[in-house]
Length: 316
Ligand SMILES: *[C@@H]1O[C@H](CO)[C@@H](O)[C@H](O)[C@H]1NC(C)=O
Ligand SMILES: *[C@@H]1O[C@H](CO)[C@@H](O)[C@H](O)[C@H]1NC(C)=O
Ligand SMILES: *[C@@H]1O[C@H](CO)[C@@H](O)[C@H](O)[C@H]1NC(C)=O
Ligand SMILES: *[C@@H]1O[C@H](CO)[C@@H](O)[C@H](O)[C@H]1NC(C)=O
Ligand SMILES: *[C@@H]1O[C@H](CO)[C@@H](O)[C@H](O)[C@H]1NC(C)=O
Image (cartoon, rainbow, N blue to C red):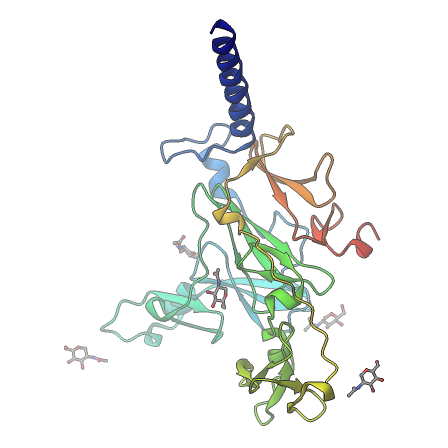
């Protein structure tokens, strides 16, 4: 009987220790009362995502294209010669041109990145904002290349490399066959008089018709596959389509319990560090708080670009 009790006690202790271990690895999401030790309010106010990055926000952006401004829907960025020409504000535009607004309406303007115009705020598709305590992400441009990662209310600009695309279903860079974003190919070949056909990157039987620079998804009849040479649906044997997207189960960062980084994070600023022992993971630190992030399976973290990429390009 005593032996049995001791055994149970031992088992209990082992279970407790084990549970504590597991808990230790998780980042406890702080509540709204958390005043953010190590983060002073002034620093929060002057934080500028666009100065806090090695990514060229205007890289590969055509002259005259305007980008939305993260954190303020009224502002926009004008790109020229692959650099930021100006950060402008629709509110200034309204101030300088009073007759731009309906005098009977509140002249609160926002920048609409899809239509590339300043218009009434309620008609604008503003970028999401970073929520105070969560880890989340959203697409920055329509090319599925640049994206924004948020933690503790701080946005950082990120970029996928080597033809990888940002997958909003997993919050990270992924192989194109799992994202199937063709928006960039559509707008790059934008000719109002032309109708462009694009094969899907995710499915042999799917394709897109680009019209006005936007892709519209089409599906071939069952058993047929899209054939780029005739721009039509064809018998599968006539099409060399080899898309190999096996089913996966990857939860987005935003819906996964956060795991604490087992390193000491700098108290100031946002930083990325390689994982101590895994090539397919990395640490993300925001003002002393660190989380461990996993790459998409098949990708490795590259400290040079501070994101996950195809193994053959890492360190090159
Ligand atoms: C957005 O920026 C404009 C111009 O700098 C400023 O006047 C306005 O208060 C800002 N809005 C918000 C919500 O921060
Ligand atoms: C872009 O840069 C090139 C060379 O750096 C320069 O010659 C050209 O004038 C610039 N164009 C504009 C519109 O600023
Ligand atoms: C503004 O409202 C007034 C009164 O409702 C109306 O008479 C006027 O025509 C309106 N102006 C415009 C530009 O809609
Ligand atoms: C991802 O983006 C697509 C297209 O914009 C949208 O339909 C979908 O709801 C988004 N998915 C998530 C998880 O946000
Ligand atoms: C498919 O690929 C094979 C081998 O690469 C090639 O011999 C064949 O001509 C291709 N067929 C078509 C329809 O493109």
